[in-house]
Length: 490
Image (cartoon, rainbow, N blue to C red; front, side, top):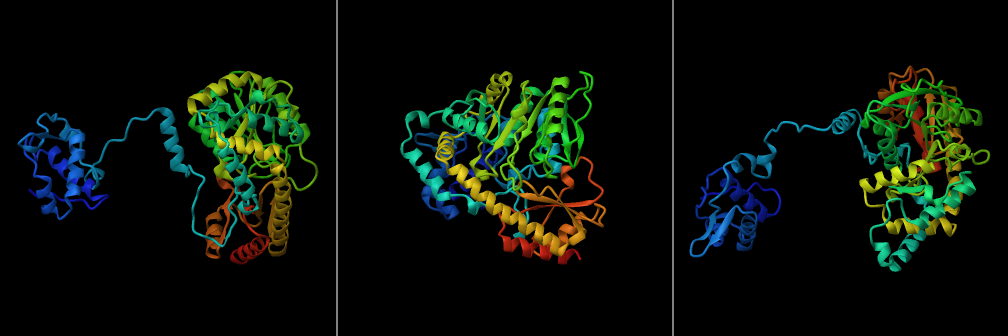
């Protein structure tokens, strides 16, 4: 009796799969006697322990059974359909073709979205010496030792409650620390009871959309806009209503009749993504009026407004909201580090119960130790000190970007959105938008990573724009990278 091993994985699993394949194909008939573990080991040139482990798995899964005086035999009652449904594992199974499964509409929409764009944030392209990828903080600026000390302290003192399931809305200690900070620095009168801790802004957007938007309903978005929000709304089956962004942010539309009015609006007023413009007070009040007259809610994504380099901090849109129309989304991915996976929602009172219920269904709460550590980090002043240091260092990086663009591009480049955040949008004059792939290839050949703004438009712009993220780069890297980019494009 000859068995062929497939060479994949541990030896005992290879032996198990080889015997199982002959059982399922009826090469070994029901009731047939299997070779002894010693004989099979000698035949395959493996140790007896390997064949014993393989037989244990066959016995445990019901493919074989042990008979006193007869050794191990193939199970006599294998159903006929096993040979069709239970194909061998490993390469033989992977070669089989199967019909695509029938997906729900949400699943089909998610697959369609994924085919048009990679649904992930941990993109690993070629290693480039001067990578201007945006959306990342300077990891070296974070006080890692302080964070580890606080996390270790919390872990050592953890009670049974800290190790158990937590409330879906998040630990009270963190929600109270967030409420106090939002009142002081963002002008939001946020009680802890209206704050829900989430696993980042993507979960926040998903929860809000699932609670408020049915398939076919309309969602107002900026044009251009954050692509992660677009994915959430499209997956929910919403109809996107783009509103153009000019030098003063989103152009607020005229309210529509109730049957056509958007159910939700999504905006980034303190640092519009990706253009970087800031929504002035007049437009903010106009947007709130639009929401009231349209009976809509507004999602305010305040993703990196803490990094403001000129003038005082702006009051959040939620701080101007007197009618409970604004849903405020905050995240620590760019202020601390993305792997923390903590963000939060500040909700109108009317939405607390449904959002918490949706959160409880989606998961069983965010990690308690990280929440408690973050609460300590905020209350002991470490967070504010970190932001102040980061603001100075990022301001120096920003200045290096502006100076290098002026020195090496001059009038060939128009810079947009440099007053806040961790990236700038650069419009390359003299290009009509079509040669962006050529721009990226030439830059990559020079060791420079630049990224087109076109994917953030529903209709690509007529001119060529690139996003330059400067958070993780040093000032020297920034200057050298932009010099190389200019040389590559000259």
